[in-house]
Amino acid sequence: MPLDEQVVLVTGGARGVGASISRAFLREGARVVVGFRESREAAHRLEEEFPGRVLAVELDVRSRSQAVRAVEAAAERFGGPVDTLVNNALVDFSFNGEARPKAHELTDDHLRAQVEGSLTGPVHLIQAVLPGMREQGFGRVVNIGTNLFQHPVVPYHDYTAAKAALLSITRTFSHDLGPDGITVNMVSGGLLRTTDASAATPEEVFDAIAAGTPLREVTTPEQLADAVLFFASPWARAVTGQNLVVDGGLVKG
Image (tube, rainbow, N blue to C red):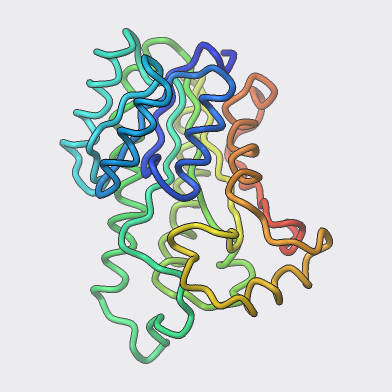
């Protein structure tokens, strides 16, 4: 299905990399459901900027009922099912290496918070969009991951553990859902320059990462968003269960 015919749901779609993903789809003519938890004003600004093509919906991905309501609202507004789901929301996390819990400080609460936001939440959303995707025999799911569990330049234990589990879900769900015409893939960035979550990162960390990449630069949210478009586009129709690392070549494979 061409991008300009799609209804796309982006969780955490009003700020940071989520806003870049929302804008990338809007640039290509898609209609976009922007899920937000705290960024109400930013979400409604997108509605005003793209009248008739953006629907802002309150969505805490940890709530199964809110996931279902968001999908129902999309169908009511745009007259059809969600064609592409982008699981981007990041719940209550900041990339601050100095403040992260060290191995001896990691608690059940740290792990539980990230698993609920970055694993359970995406599963809620995938299950919510499945009936519509199955009925039309088409669907695209793109999960946002990280290169940090392959190359932990800063070991964010709780965050990377949850994202590694999301990669497993990406691959196992692709097997289950492939017969229904639904692909499930992951786009994994490194540290992005700059989002709300990475604003706490010291400049010297950005510089060190840039120096280690073949492109000698830190990936931007807009560059990562372009890779998300690929997985939703007709050009990726035979690609599923894959993890595409978009980090300027820092991590291979």
